[in-house]
Length: 324
Image 1 (tube, rainbow, N blue to C red):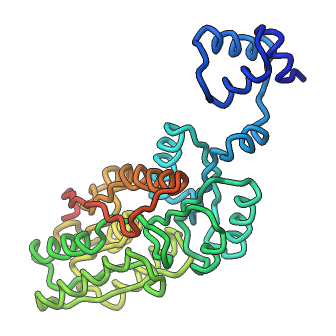
Image 2: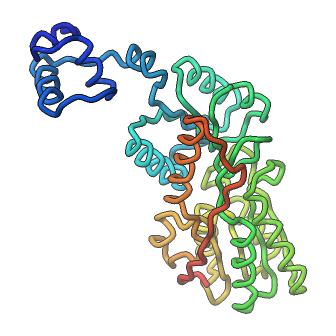
């Protein structure tokens, strides 16, 4: 296996010069840089990343903890986070917690062993204190963790727009299918907004919570079936995610409810599937790309020793399609 000394000899430069090229430190002429890279290519030399990280005092690795990589929202978010991290010279270590606290803790320990420069959290099974003990730059996505900075869309405004749209379209009995409200997350503001608007407008309403640690279509469908069984005359539903909204569309078809004549539906996220389901889904668009970009910006600023804002709320957009 070739060494840095072999590269230096092949390129006709010193070992120090090769090291400076690898670590991009100090002035190196383009001619010398090209010689070093050509020598590395000819010798098939692979730099020792651990040694380089010790030299630079950075690993150029960022840990990303999400609850379920197969969930469309987190899949899109992960793709954008990886893209923006790569643009800044960083790699992502992806950890799929599966909403399992012991698994999440194991991943946190693993990330510390790999000396990541920071962690982006999209999961929520651990208590804030466990993250505060990590002693690394951290950014949370749509999660409240004590003094940890977080990025979220304007959930409250999204809830306001979604609920008002259903009422403006003539809905008289509406329901909100929320995430588990036991979790202290910014997403709960969708529920708060729904309840406030429905109360102000004197419209009959109901709220149903999904189960903690579950992102399963069949579970969503069961919740929707039970909702219609108990309240068959519901004519408007605001779902806290597009995946739940797609499940509502599926069950509505089973029950021969016409959309939007008998039932109007608004989702939340505007993931790719929202425009593919039939009928196409009216939804509140989260700026997923911008959320990812902001998360990377915040983590890098902390890595560089800067203080960052704790609350980072990004604007949403109501996208009207065929379900309303």
